[in-house]
Image 1 (spheres, helix red, strand yellow):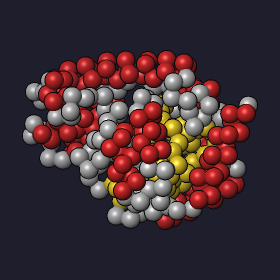
Image 2 (tube, protein in one colour; image 1 turned 30 degrees about the horizontal axis):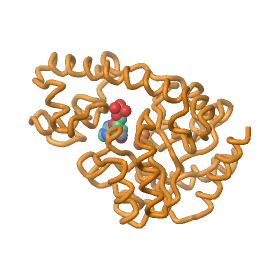
Image 3 (cartoon, protein in one colour; image 1 turned 90 degrees about the vertical axis):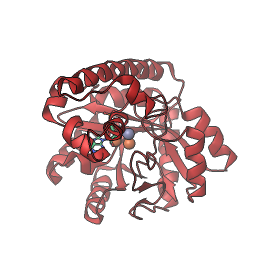
Image 4 (cartoon, protein in one colour; image 1 turned 135 degrees about the vertical axis):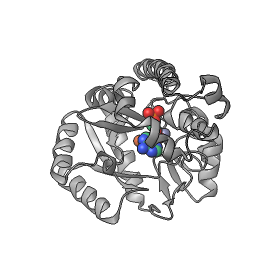
Length: 286
Ligand code: AMP
Ligand code: ZN
Ligand code: FE
Ligand code: FE
């Protein structure tokens, strides 16, 4: 199985890079990418473990960007220690830290008594992502599930207006990915909730910015959505990728490595891996 969208505890996943890769190998994944939010810090450890298991491994990242909507751009084949990429990631880590402070103040203002220390304590000492806050809110009894915490506190218009951090443009993020030797792919297009025509216009504009592919196979895509994304990829000469968006059972309980949501993924087409490798290679030659 192929899984090109996986998070570790270097961002908001549950397991270390080595544990995540080991679990993937045991789950029958033979080609994978680690794609943490706004950081490539887990790549060296993941890469080494993948080599021990004889797996094909792509060093990856997932960057949140702000266009007309928030989009997630996956980068594959990046050099994790590339200076411009490291600088970019450092800036984002700082913006996340500032957001954490605003989020605590915001929650306190809503009568939710929670400290950053408590958030870190329920997450193995870490806090960088909203899923960390969601878990802490559940643990402290302010929400009945991670989804409930997102709905009540972490995705409201007030949250976006007063707490959310500034994000780069799609063009900037795609540019950084390419500069660091990688190629850029639009993650989970279904999440954008765009009409077919609006998604097509967006793809054309992102392709102008240097986008190379679309994540057509994803845990939460219906068969109809996948068919549409495959057709758009074909029409616009874009690569196709596949990913579960695994974060670990404590963060996303039903999403499994390789198989996705109750077997929704299960991609085995070796052409996906070879075309991605070839595209990264072509970018390297530029
Ligand atoms: P962050 O990058 O810290 O803003 O958090 C992004 C993470 O939150 C991603 O892993 C998303 O899957 C997760 N997320 C975003 N919106 C929701 C939602 N409505 N319900 C559950 N998880 C969400
Ligand atoms: Zn995440
Ligand atoms: Fe995402
Ligand atoms: Fe993701």
